[in-house]
Length: 255
Image (cartoon, rainbow, N blue to C red; front, side, top):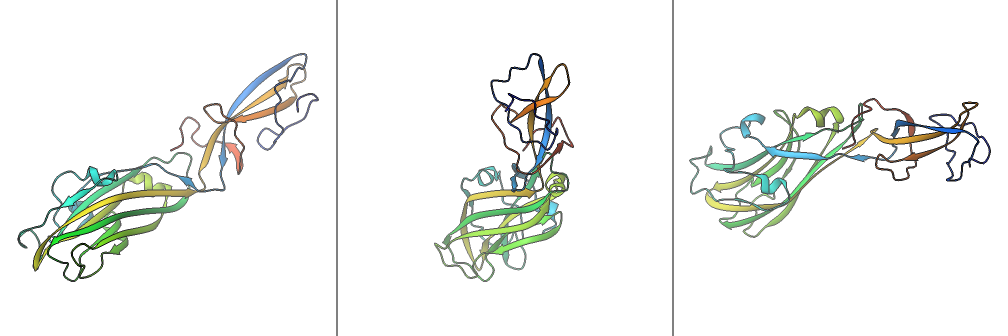
């Protein structure tokens, strides 16, 4: 409380400020601080269309024609059946949608965590799957870092959710070197069409800092800190959960 002067450490104190704080003369000072949270921090991610050439896939994986934006946004994307194997290699065609993953995690220098991607696929036919039917994968440039395969020899009407996860750093997410690829067999012995939907992508990092404002009430005569209050950047009350200190990027906002 502020009824009696209470010495507070600028970055370590937890003394709350009351609304009634009536020293004869007082002033306030506000600092932007960062709380290195002990709980995982979600990171906002963006996926934009790219090409199989970028990640180094061969002729058997031609790009799925058209925009893949519907899939990346969680909607449905159709993989049309190929009439023959001319677009592929060794009698097989795996049409492939590739997306480049981007993010701008703030105050996360040195943070590590997990990137997870999932999507649902449905085999529409008219043909059934033959041997390897497709896969969902994560890539770092031209290296596969995680993969989940569709059921082999999947029957017409088969529905399956594919999920992949990989450890990442904040630097990985910011680099733009991460990609997601969904390859589905559109011809092998017979033609077949697929629907992909319910795509989701998440990343959580441990060791990110949350920005907040700490306002100090100061006795004008003695310079003594009487109390302080913590709020979010938009003015809501905030309680630090980790180590509090100066922000490494004081003018950036959290993602």
